[in-house]
Image (cartoon, rainbow, N blue to C red; front, side, top):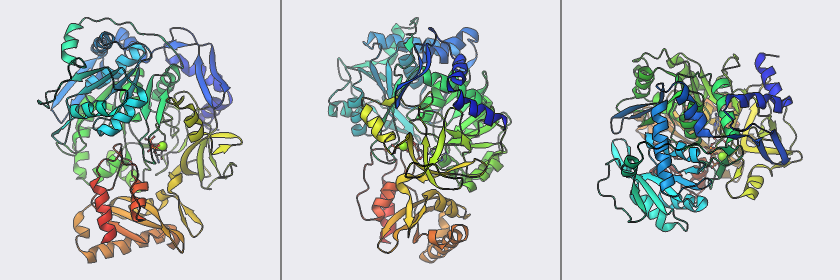
Length: 630
Ligand code: ATP
Ligand code: MG
């Protein structure tokens, strides 16, 4: 057994001993009475009786020891602002925000809805909730009023924190009128709305008696000292919605102590980040990566974190690397989608900066195709680690744990189950798959610390969504399709719902996408199964090319389509060959960058595109319709 295998085995076989040790990475105001209470399956309570606080662990304890160390770097290439907060400064800002909350009537257990752009105040707002035991629900900034209203009614917040506007690609994206509209649509609107006025939208209107200005209230509380509320470990810390890729988003409820321990341990064992270093996660606070690895994780681990408002391409495609150089970033976290965007740019941008501080890049959110994996690893010359997890789990469940595992990287594979996760691949009848056999990724409960405690306000939905596919024994179903090789390396093959069944052969969307992606002209592709009278289903590919001039005539399109089909034939066999390969300018994705295959499939089958509340660019659907007609 390797060292990691031993480490992993112990986390499963001596679960309580293992997690009791990890819990020492966190400050407890009152000691833990029971490591794991699994008396009400599938619900689990971690570190029962223990009292802690996420904000204390993320901010205060570091501020006490190294007040002047860098904690939060806010960079906006949209407004050209840049500001560095030390741990001491961060604590002061959080206490000011917490004092504002108290003045506005927020108490322990109350909900605060945060609808904010990527500015430092968004992090203050989250941490201030944690400080006083309020539960935050961060809603991705820029979601439409309807999506916002649904989330307001789900959380019934006493306060909403927002801003006049966000900025994207140099243009203000007004928020405030969406807030007003959502409050009108909602049945349970917040009593107060706190506005961080950035001066980007001069004309926004204020509702008397409800809206208050952050700068004004902050000025009143400059010297605020707000003690932390000690929370029982299983007290909810936040609500966060899944991306809505497969349908209506689910409101994940997270605990306090389990999450704090899980993040602290992950900083050490998975990300191998050290206190005093800097982490840069390119996500948004509206998503789980933003919660775990922009705000809480790095700070809990004593690292500085970078909050970046901007795109990877402005002012040019070198901006991320410029930030890495300037702030000596050692650990970076991003998404495969972003890598595929960078692949379309001039690679010279990757060579322009001194990236010697950067030890590793982690990617998660979508399958990382081998071609892109290899490309980014070669360009950067550092290990690039594929990470598999879900909003539900809060932290990675498949990864190479770089702090404790020196195993080689396998391209396109997020590798091994992370300690704490008894992750296995199952057949549909609930039995376990052999090596190299496709099946459903499941976790033997209890879920480890940090994972969702329940679906907010819907315990029955928690049980029916995650624990009803396999009941003998009960298993947490990820709804993803995966495979494990003889050496234990796993691959995710796509969503269970997206599996394509061609004449009795079941293919993951990932497998065909991988083959298409291997063609040098292709930047990105989505493959869906389309109903076919003869074969049951037929794969159909929608591809984006790196250089549009290769498909600017019907002849060129037909030629490339043939080439791509040949590629698929060669790597998977004719059975997997897409019936059509259509070229479009962009693919429909969620705001978090996930491919909306279900919508593409619906259009290809002549149906309605379905729930589109989280779609990024609806015009991509028209492109698909046009391509289907053409
Ligand atoms: P919803 O649950 O609302 O349909 P979603 O599943 O896209 O949305 P997230 O929790 O943001 O919401 O995404 C988790 C999913 O993303 C995983 O279940 C998996 O399908 C996919 N995913 C994440 N990381 C990887 C990875 N490294 N490789 C392959 N797929 C991944
Ligand atoms: Mg999901």
